[in-house]
Image 1 (tube, rainbow, N blue to C red):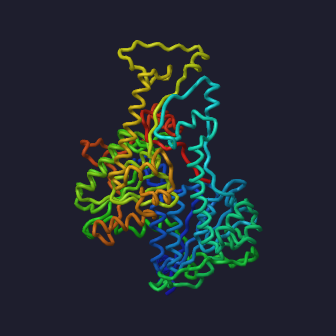
Image 2: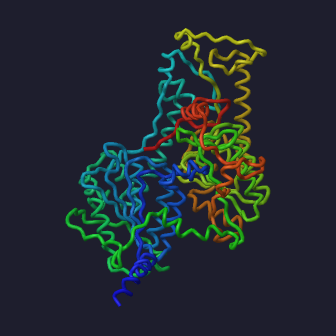
Image 3: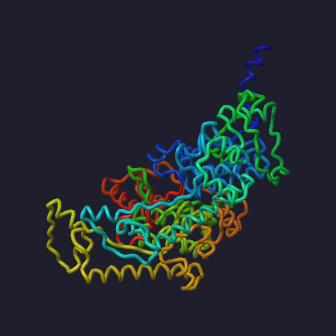
Length: 601
């Protein structure tokens, strides 16, 4: 008898693990990636990095799973993309609305540094815990620009070029020593819009007024005790205390327990704690009387097996993700860790989607501050052709979809952005650095034999001649007119309406929606719902597309129609230098590129 009990004990424990209560765990201290790399090397290197889609879908699945009792998240002061934060906040809100516990904890929201955006994320949770030695770096939103105009002049370098129009301020980084009036105007508008969103979100989550949040922001950063007294956190506690208290709530739970359909419609108000850090319940160990911890990403993958069999549902929604600076050719991942969006790779994916009978609609997820005007137009054309072929396309904008990043989505059936997405920047600039003074100081002389009047016009050893300036301006005017004309036609706007949001202006998603550039304010789930509606496919599964097997990733594509126009694993040195230049904002020929790598803190 004893022997049989021992033999059955592992089976019993396995059954408990499968049916017992779960607490989903989320660690946001390492950031969130928009997508997993497509190449084998990149996938191996990114194995431990979380993808935004896994987190959002995992949390939303957990809201409707009766085994899942709670969500606990670790958050620190390291920056996350503003729109990504809003994606996670919305998923947490859906989890809370299902009547389940949501707990955030942090060692410090900014350890002697800014923590506004990370704290904004934490306030989506019903309970916020902070270490007694931590702080809340609620210091406000800041968008900064470094101006190199004086420095490059001292080096004997100057920038020659032009922009269309006054708000297309990317060249300012190299030509100015401070903000121009148009540059300051749009930056102030960005900060005001984002600050309003932060104040409103924190106020709603913590049961405060937006004005009170602004007052506390002006006092920040706040010590742990000050944050507790102000109602910004519920409890001062260490990790072991947070986890022990949370798991103790479900000690003795067995089976599926709570999580009924009635609970799925119940709103949960923001929780409040006693702020004590004294003795806490002893943590359950995950046995028959305790809840088991499981990372959200692992939970999502374990519950998503049915997505791999789309044929049974009569079709599915294809998710095509495009991130990074837009270039001609194939998408690439460099040794520097950056990504570029190759027009060939994205165009091939769109062609394959509209040729696949199982694909009923496309969700086109974009996170890019732009790049080549020509490459952007290649992708835009494929989006338009996909629509014309009868496959709806819904664009979902990530942290940034500006300039070329907006150009490639404008033909979509619908465009969905988060209120904090940076978008617009409808404009163009072009030019070059002139190194004449620096080369003279170094004793470097450059000569060439030219076979045309403009053969060396883009070389760095001299400025533009009058006739070359005429060509530069013609290029800028034509590219800008093409961009704005296509926006007007695609979005059904008048020339006056386009001019009101164009001229290089950078907008938040909230302002872009008001200006007619965006159809809906929401995230990836909202885009999927729209795609299902347009495809008349309620409940249709969302699948990353194209799905390539290991062999397809290794062998060359058979033709330009092959969906396996896979990204390259790494660039050579020249490619890495080109990416560095693009990140710095050094222009190529007529780029549609937003300035800087905007980080909102």
